[in-house]
Length: 340
Length: 293
Image 1 (cartoon, helix red, strand yellow):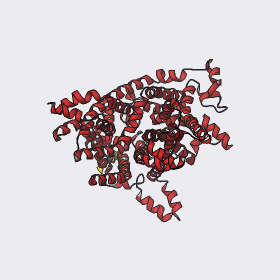
Image 2: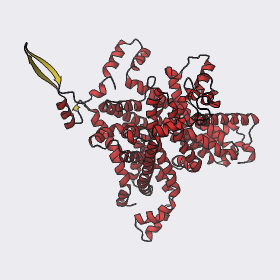
Image 3: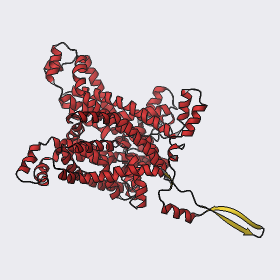
Image 4: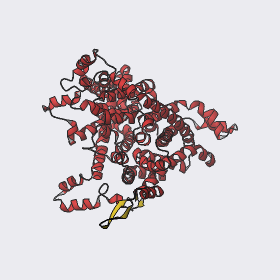
């Protein structure tokens, strides 16, 4: 394709991505270096019958004016990154000096909002991704072995957890595990503890969020694996059997190697999607027990006081996190491209 | 595969059957339970005394006289004006799908037909954009949107969703267009068509299966979005998903959690119908990038 026609064909979509993906990235970097203006304080002299007193008051009009003229705020450099809400350099240092062991240090670290969010996000990403892949693989093998007539309905119902809106899907599960819901009260009976409540316990909440994550994402892995199973070479499978391979050996040495490239693909997509975990935390009202980086940004942006600079700083840190996550893939693509 | 290769010992058959039944229960039961429960009153759906109340509707019968009640739906759709949010969602989805597909087919076609180095890097950059959490972009939009008075309007949300959608749309359509033989449009160009004419007269007539599949996923992204629409749209322009989230804040205290349950069912129903009609396209779309790429 000629350079010129390529340019015109990709123009609309590159323009959209440039304006609404690339520029916002620059915008968050700039915004994170500024903080909102302080209120303008003026000194006024109150003179009464008993002499004059000096007092300070906020000049609302001047503050408005200043904020309108320089909407970015005043330049603050990296202070937003280093404050308590983000990297919390001073607090981490203090915690390091005060703590008497790595466990103690970690528990102190988790009182800081950024590290709390980061830890949950990473745990969620690296627990949910492998479990999703494993469950998806098992469902694919099982459905593939099922009678042809019921495969359609099986796939239909398997797709539901993935297609349904994450906020809605997690809400449905949340209502069921509510202490008055069907799963919640069953759990109480099983545990023999009538006061058991998922909402009130941090470990149970973490488990619940991750169970939701696997439930939501497993259908994706299932579909990809299922399609892969349709293309397994039947001759290889048969000759393996003639050579005396058991059922397990056939899965291990024929099917798994065939599905390996798909696993890389699923893992990549899942890592990206799990790192942005957000909706279930809103649905489960879990923010007291678990927060994620996306949720922290959402929280800063919402509410009465929109803390744009704080949100921007967390966003920049999140983007850096995503880049680190993608780095192995990018390096590999780079090398492969260089070779070809 | 020979018949013998498919034969399984009985124990394995039972194990697989059990596993499938368990998975089906996990996947389908929550939806059926919520659908059934949405026609009950709160005392049954959240039953402290006995979970069986939610099935037989003890309190529903006491409070309303019948075994089923449409109170939740009436409250959500009429009282809380959920229909307005549904209308907004319809507008947003319609425009997002149309515009993303228009941009995406043009871009995807060009990317599939170019063997240049920059086409490859274009796709890699799109992949990086695809990985960004949407909410990080939103925090980049807000200061600018406030300043230019773009905040709160449906068109703003539409164009933002189109842009966020582009990386995925491009990837998917590129892989679909790669499966359309190059000879088709190239022979048209040998016959004297320009690139655009070849695209219009040769490619457009055969591209619909791929476009429909991609359109389904664009629709899902717009329909399911929460992060962007919750932050960018003003209260009267809200779409359905942020509206449900706002129910959680207000109605749970008012004791009208059933409004939220009813609207959750209302949001899920169109998706059910969509999967029923387009199951094949969804499956092929999910696997397009993986199996062929």
